Image 1 (cartoon, rainbow, N blue to C red):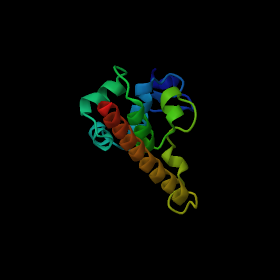
Image 2: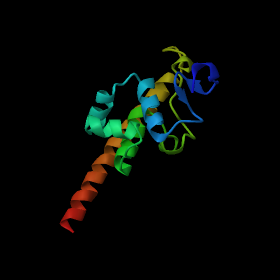
Image 3: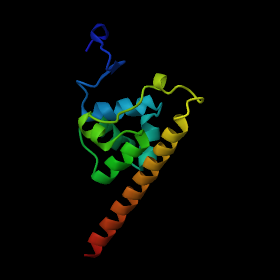
Image 4: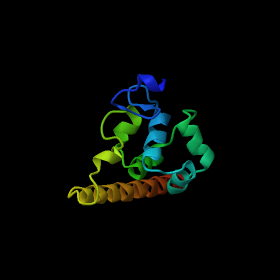
Length: 132
């Protein structure tokens, strides 16, 4: 898509209507000013794995998908379909004097914590299956 055909739901190269799963990961990551290396480290995966996800060459397992939605502060449904709670526009934040900013920050932290717990639970389930 060229820049002249931009619409209201597009930020830079990203368009909600044409985005793939990998585009949504990259768009949310860039919206948080995270490098690929930063996100890979937060998710506990190899950089190549994240690049494959962003290039739509492979997809994460459920536990990493849930963890990623928490780290990127987007809903799981949005990551998968593009519908629902996606990245927020930094211009909508309203700055530190916005009374909802604290609540949003707390929700973000809870999502990250939940993602860590889901990942831990996935690891425990794997260990349990191996003992079979």
